[in-house]
Length: 253
Image (cartoon, rainbow, N blue to C red; front, side, top):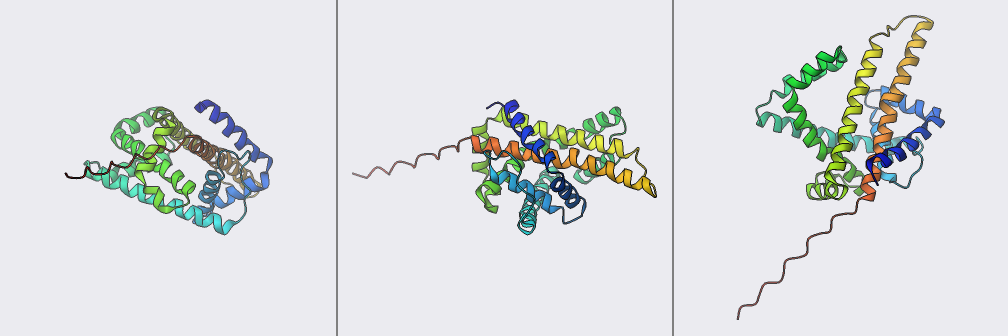
């Protein structure tokens, strides 16, 4: 199935969540609370685990199990961040300086197109490194959830084999689309929130309402969308066959 067809299926799957506003609101609230927000990652894990056959997102329930699943994803994600940091330092990149630059740009929400392009050009080497390692990191998380094993997050041979089965071009396009959506989402949120000044009285209710709507459309719904897409392409790609065992040694005459 083409990536466009996968996106259409995932979009229908994601939009069905809008018919469950109470659960969507619960996810938003869980996302806002520090540490408790691991439950949002755990919900991602449940979407991945359900597979391509699911037509609607899972119910927001079993919060303890959901939290633990999210904690596992956070730990593996942290390990991949450390790997990026180490490789960047080995290659002579000022990783801490780059991260400080990224944080600064995100907090001002790329206040202009020229600022955004300047940031991309300055940190291009680091962005390429993050993208290349991110190809493995994202699939490692999916592989871990699908195989229900932490060790499978670092089974590089199986991860690369699955990407090959999916198709490198198709997988590149999926990850690139994911990154573009994240960047655009962050830009939109920062831009809109820069015009929102939290006020007292009734005004703060309006401002909080704006923030909650943004959280749902720019954070929660894209997570559901891409979790479903990654799950589907993983399930539909056959596992690469194991290489045949070596022939027995020829007996000496």
